[in-house]
Image (cartoon, rainbow, N blue to C red; front, side, top):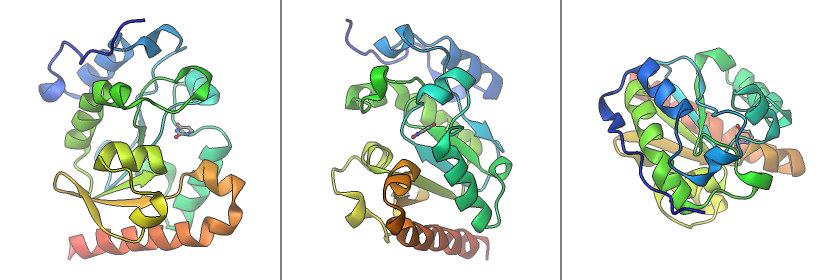
Length: 197
Ligand code: URA
């Protein structure tokens, strides 16, 4: 075991191919030892929406793409209900590697990995960040407030508007909460539309 260390390389000037190859070679925390591959993120690299989940699970670790399992199907359906195809948004995670046994990401793992996400955010320059679930919301907003309290309000990550909603995995366990998540998505969509005026 070795303590997480920030990536030695300064990623803030990297372009997409450089960033992607830096991420795929990353050994900055212990998660590199157990991953099959990194899960960089997928979609439109100049999207209006940046969707951020927690961390890759087994399916994503195998396929190298975020949200490809059951949760991915639900996410795709949620996006479709908004009139968006998966390819029209950019989807990534708090962590680029799967935590062993799918345990929760540790704060120091996110601190190490955050520079990559920050560079992705700067490159995409989205109009809206949708943080799905407590891990994404707490990591990005640096608070511990429950998702129930964070949703329904407009937050910001730096200058970028950010809306918190439930994680699709939670919605699969608790379908009765889908209506609230739909309200969150509509709230986020109205903010994106407002920004275009
Ligand atoms: N859950 C997440 O948060 N991200 C994925 O990529 C898959 C499942």
